Image (cartoon, rainbow, N blue to C red; front, side, top):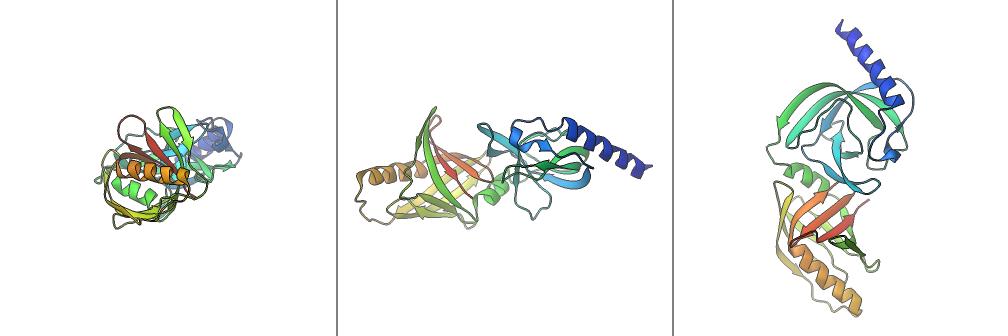
Length: 245
């Protein structure tokens, strides 16, 4: 009887997802190919991640195995209610999607069973570290309130986070280094900042480098996803915006 019920759920989920379950915040990600649903195990992170749909938004972070990288899910999982601060293991019906974003799963999901819901003991810092490390972040722009100013394309400004709590990168002319500490509620502290002391011959490069290093050292909060990072500094909505491959 249980096996028959599971088959019925999968068939119903396949029909729902194919017909209408793909209408989400980002239409690029939500076009499903008709076909049978597959049953999968899905892990959901205890916090949402920064993603780019029609505009910047917050997406669920999902993966099919604890060893997989986190992916941004641009819609809702049908039948699932997300509560921040909890890690989830779900049994879902999955239907193949057409042309999902590069940082998104290949499937649309329908909840079949919430197998576990566990309070995250790290306050989300473990997920943030997974997203931040083992990649090179490239400075894209500076934000102040509603105004966004593009960064210089050349020379490139970069940022790398190590699992040892250290940061390093290029500020344009000079290499820099320092320490970081992730905190709950997407907080971050920077310290021990230093850099080489080469002179920047171009005034605009020098101005950007000084501005960047001052903002980076004052970072106090972050939003991060599989491909986007925003480091807030000072008060208000001032931020450094990064992208990665």
